Amino acid sequence: MNTKTNRRNFLKTTATAAAAIGMPTLIPASALGKNGSVAPSNRIVVGGIGLGPRGRKVLDGFFKHQDCQFVAIADVQKERREIIKRKTDQKYGNTDCVIYDDMSGILERDDIDSVIIATGDRWHTTASITAARAGKDIYCEKPCAMNIQECQQLDDTIKKHKRVFQAGTQRRNVPNFKLAVDLARSGKLGQVQEVHAGILNLQEYLEPLPAEPEPDPSIINWDKWVGPAPMLPFNAAYCRGRWRNHKGLYAAWRLPEWGAHTIDICQWAADADGTTPIEFEAVSDGMIQAKYSNGIKLVMRLSGFKGEGDWIEGLGTCPVRFEGDEGWVEAGDAKKIEASNPKLLENKKYDQISGTDPVMHIRNFLDCVKTREQPICNSTAVRYGHMASFAAAISWKLGHKVTFDPKKERFVKDAEANRMRTYKRRAPYTI
Image 1 (cartoon, one colour):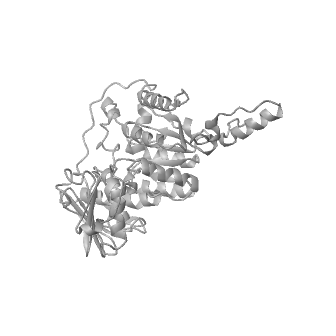
Image 2 (cartoon, helix red, strand yellow):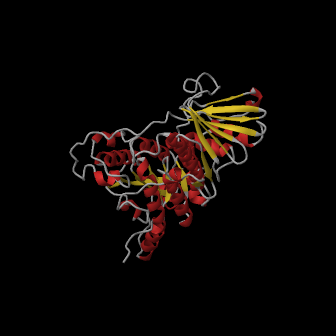
Image 3 (spheres, one colour):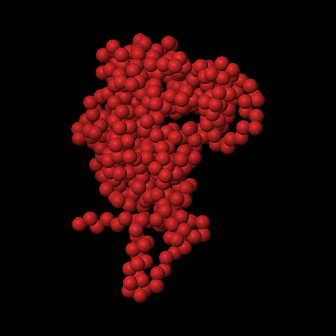
């Protein structure tokens, strides 16, 4: 017999039972939604999967919204799950946060509506697909996939199970980036000709770290930590963030991680959330150029943004630039926006928040969980924006121009590039 309690019926059932035996129903004001609080039956109940430093920042964003309640953390690292429990219990003034060493503990709970996934790259697709199959809505950090095939599998699964999915590409809900995109899409720059994305230096994967004795699985479950990636010897530094740019742990030579920040915004500005460029070519160590079927160019570059000073001292990290035949606009993480003509920005108000702040992006997700509408960076936007990043990285790796068919989602007459669309997942972490 299924003995799990549906929280949405809990208060109603409790009140009915109390009335039946003649007992007074004493329900606190917070449970009724009084004094500015939100009644439990109207709250979105949230669990976390793999919340490290970035995950804790995202959790802080969820804490700012009274209509959600964080109740449980699953992490294969004991230290990290205990950090989240302490943080959550302090927030709510109780000891209710439940800890699990495997995400199945969260996914099996009927009372949990949504999950935050902030594991390393290798787990994003697997955890998201597993959560969708369990009937959970998903807020997943980026990049959400490790290769082109995972982009397809993720989007297909989210659609099949009719889940709400938001990628953690929070700049789509940061006001200066939104204003820059609006200027491009509204025709204020004329016909858009080029969109530019700031990227990092691409580099080959690092050599594996020296092997160390594996910890007890109750402290760090190394097999589960590695998950679908090829097994490699344990080194504690991996678990402290040093997994980045190691083969199998990190997505495609640094480009998809940064591309999920900036190429994503360029896709949006170019009205290309349902497609990709058709040609990609690394023209230098610091620049990759691509072209959409309508002629718009996507330029991925390390520098050269005009704005105010260079892209770090001026606009901040993750700069984007949109050029039309009548003007240009740039935005970056430093709460700034620059335009070729100051009149483009006259009377344009936007809240001054950093491009790294996820609070408004989380609000968009929570609203869509309630309405069942599509968030601003849903799984389809992820599918094509991430595929563009992977195709660009593959062009760089192969050292030649590649042609990509966004309808068939394959490279044209390029067997070597097509082999790089996926990789073999380690059992039992298959999807």
